[in-house]
Image 1: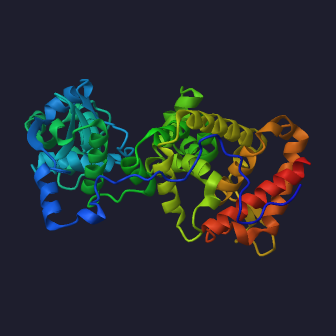
Image 2: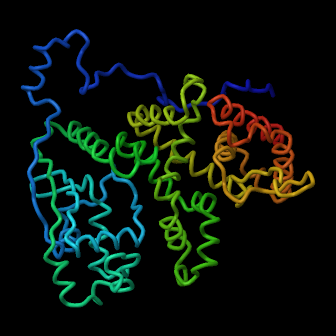
Image 3: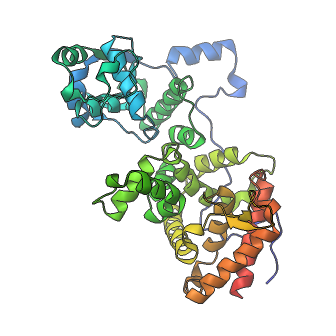
Length: 428
């Protein structure tokens, strides 16, 4: 079989899996021929991209009822995963005790008297969980006497003081957008702007906010696949099992891994969602300019991929599941680890990295996705052992290419083709 060029992929694409961008006008841009003062003034008079708001205040004691109702959606698709630890939640409660002003939450009126939480998910969750006695206060500086106490254990005066505090809200009214498409775009725009001065959004959190759509939803769905969790979060699982095994006691396999992931910083930053996106985007990595950073490639692919027909997304779902399951069956926990020189050893010895690495994930997933028809041959015990040994030699001979510094599109393409050629040779 002829070798694939280092910087060119031979991916067989699905029907309508086309990256050629359709010519579309950005509603937030002014046509080049219409940028006169009169045209700009007319745009302002029409109210284009102008937010209609009102304000409200909610007593903290009503937050629990508010979240339990069907009128408030606390986790719309553009929100990031929860990232606050107990100490940060406790600091919020301490601020209420001391009556320190808290920034308002932002709501979007999805329907009359029905709202989405655009910004403030972490604050509302912290308040709700405190009233539900789901955590005890810790790390308080001004009210150290309250450390270790849950809401129900607080002195009566302290509870009453918290209950009478309010959290303010700014509500974007339904009149802000003329269509559902306008509404989604404006929500994403506002979410991105109000978060630009707060906790820095990670790349995938930003994509989730700005490029919400069917492909983004699929990436989030597939990131919950148990096999992916086992391969990417196995080290977190071992650490949690060793340090706090009672948390996992009595839980089934899926529940156990869900708990592990929720406590992982990688999960909170949506790194696992990005892994799924990388798998789809890198099928056509050679179609992007070599000078374009990989982060921008993922942005552009997701933006375009959200318009792929459902038939392509169905094929994507099947391909990812069959690939990740095959990788797990053949390589087990070492699937995305790198066999490399032991920096601590004085001799020229090698060992497997502890953490899974993206420089291994990308080529392994790409190569196996092209060979799912050979699953039965690959999963035989003899072949599994032989392929693992052949991988060790491959990594030893190409150690520099798998360096963490080699992160350009060209480097990534070379690793993908190297792995595909290696797997092809092994199978033949």
